[in-house]
Length: 582
Image (cartoon, rainbow, N blue to C red; front, side, top):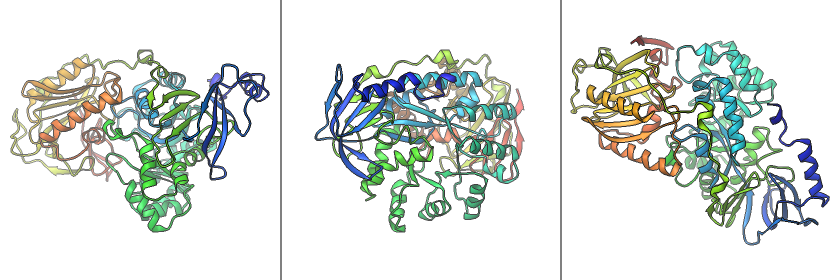
């Protein structure tokens, strides 16, 4: 940890001074560059000197020592800072490495990431080793959150989310915030341990990210008093106003399940908002296919199209985020002393770059990806291996007698309902949309069985190791087909499998702990689209099966969830039917 405490060591800082004095040559000089200077809110022209991973000078002068310096004529193009994604969930089938590789190609060179999967699946020492390695393996700048709760009800929560673990995460120099606060109702109900963690984060000058969908003004006020700084759940213009009015940094979302940004920007215009410095943008960790047009570049484009002032459109994806997270001395602008994350645009109205510098390395040039910028990552060193299950699923596990089922209202909202079908049979009729649903411990210790309504009317067998906790989800009309799907998923080392009868008709391998793929996003997009098509052909009514799988267990959403402790009533905070031991 000591070697990471300072962004640049003393020796490096002296070398930066040597470049200014002509004793060393810069690595790259971007000559006559028209660039966005956010400190004076103007498009200006300057020469930009880069030494290794840092901008060491921006101004009219040229270096006196140019030995081996790469000179780049920037006349006719426009430069803006590398974009920042402030709310990444880098485990949505993809992994942090492949997502960073893909995002950087469209100009997103800094990611602030959810740590949930690392906190749940790895021991703390391994997780921190992973954070250090991925920081040094990538030209993309990687930062992290510290979750205070698992977003569901789990066994041994007090171990995974112990005070010692949370304190260690908060103290890590790569962690910028506590949250997101999906467990905020418990905080309001008197959870003083969570409040203590918030206090610790504030003492360390780190931010607190909320998660307050539909929150009243009274709730927003209370959460601000308890320490929340930012929230990304505004879905209407009035909700934007309430957050801004009470001093929140307000994050506007454009995601697969909440593509609200165009309407929210219309709302800003209707409200007459002219000051955007406390507004930021996020894609909120969407599945792979959502990113076909890029990441933050697409949100900037939408903002420009909605008549947001161009400089503010860029600021909402750069300097505003950096200031919120107190990293503006490193990121978010093209200025002396900042990390050399720079996007080269054809023009200021086209935010998808034709060239990208990240930490002073070309990762995209003349619209071509620079493959050598992305070294492979040592997954096995960090115990991120294929899922290994040393137990068998049998027909005896697939016993369904629970009178209470789960009815999907959309991709993520689930209500309780009374089961009327005969669930003792081996195969349910395809004349209705009710399926067997089973959540089983990845170590084979417990299971919980019920009926799921609204997922499909004709999926025979479906198995997924992708879930909030990494436990196994089984869905289907036919119990034997569910076992076939499980066995194939097991053979793959984790993944998502769809079965018709005894035939596997689609599989999506997730060979990193059963929750992430090691494939590039471009390949993963094809596999995800294939999954969605097959499920929709079999009666999945909705648009995002990936989020359905993720949120089946998530107790920050109403009304009922299947969790490792049993069927859970979210509104009343009570287990209705406990999990049973196998």
